Length: 43
Image 1 (cartoon, rainbow, N blue to C red):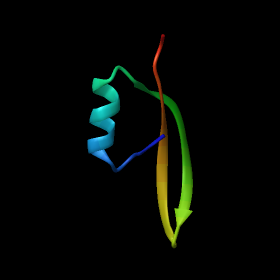
Image 2: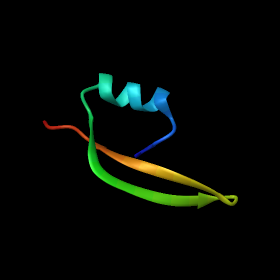
Image 3: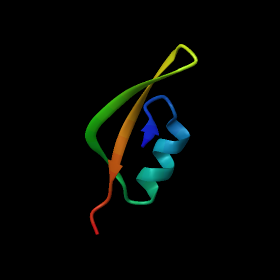
Image 4: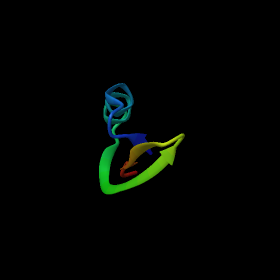
């Protein structure tokens, strides 16, 4: 999964042929909430 705010990671996965899978998960680290996006790629 990649973070919603991490555009560099999003570009990396999208250039490699991955697409956002439509699911997201919020995780809290040291009091900061990060939203993780699930990427998937069709084989």
